Length: 621
Image (cartoon, rainbow, N blue to C red; front, side):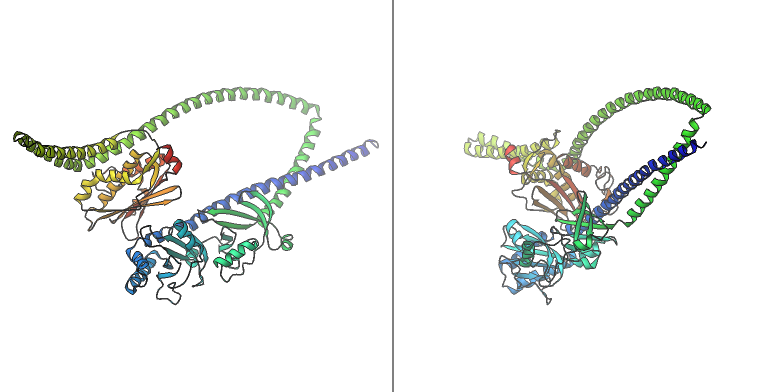
């Protein structure tokens, strides 16, 4: 006993020493695993929140993107650029801009001449009016003159209030000038409501534009280089602001757009705990929404996880020691061995059963894949049939008008043929030839009508090519001409000439027919019915908006307007498939379809499709 007792104590001491590194490893592993899990969850939450904030901010600004272009089309604006010294025309332009700004809920709308001097403004009667102010140094003015439109964020040098500027050059047929719409910061902030934590919106150079922390307003996250500060001074973008950096110090980059940072100077950040910084872009404006999240809660959870990991590892080691001691007994050894053999046999049986189940599941999966492939083929065929059925449905609606169009030339042909016979009998050959020429013209007209019908009704596959918008709209107008004239509808086209898109022309004409046909139906009973077709190009995309001055789409139908069999027409006037088919056709060619009700009444359906680049036009020439 005297020799065995010291040996047992040494054995216990060795076991204790061996357990210490295991406990330390368990604490590290548990903390590291918890840190990653908690951080991933927090990053996911912040990403979702930033996506929401980015969408809100994008919607607020994008709502006014086309406002300047709309104002530039008004005759009062074009007149004041032609006669800037005429008091009557200036007053008319000022009052139009004032009413336009009130309806759009903007802060100011103004017109600059070719030299960048304000000649009319919605705030013409305000002490801070832009009339007579030289704004040629502003980047949005130079961009609008250079490429047709421009956007800019900055502090107003006249009003000393920050805002976002949308600039649009006047149309080519008008005198040179620029229309500008300003949306002030207070209005953007009222619509954009970030959470209570440190959430900011920054421009492309890292300057804070909007912030839930007032002290961060107009401060860059990092020090700005001298050339950027010089540019700010030349453009007066942040007039009167010191632009003191907040001091974001990068500690570690986790993923693109996600990093661990500290705030303050380098000396201050060395003592500060890191924060999680997450960024998300805001549309095409070059802005970003950034959030800074404190990680003290995560660190507390990590500490608890380390403690629990140590406790769990210690309990596991104690359990292992107890099992080792119990296994020394022979009876327990035999019991354990028998149990192991039984477990082995059960495991082998389960493996065989599981293998059989997996083989059966694989067979069922192969059958299901084949069935889904057949279903997908059937679905594609059904979709093509649906598009063709939509064409035939539209043709049915146009049948009465087309019949009327053909009856007139047929009656004329009958009369002319009888006249030709009489002229030939009287040997009036020259007059007979003139009559035959008139008959050939009528036949050409009938061939044009029937040719459009055959092309529209033909069923075909999607074949993309560069096509001009104007001929397709002309073909559509020819098919719907009888219905348009029957209701005395005025159709006005804006910016149609010279615009080409990448599409399947036959299917694209069906989209135009569906949208124009819906607009015609919506104008039933409207006094002075009117349809505007506005075509705008933006880089590699083309937007074609079809607007009417009817009652608009009912509020309860607007969220479901593109669903099949949803229609605002009376029973029997339509199946509710036209917009569904049009949306499917546009998706096939890489486009999209949007709907909204106009503020002054009426509905607007906008087609967004790829523009035909010079390369695509040469390939399909």
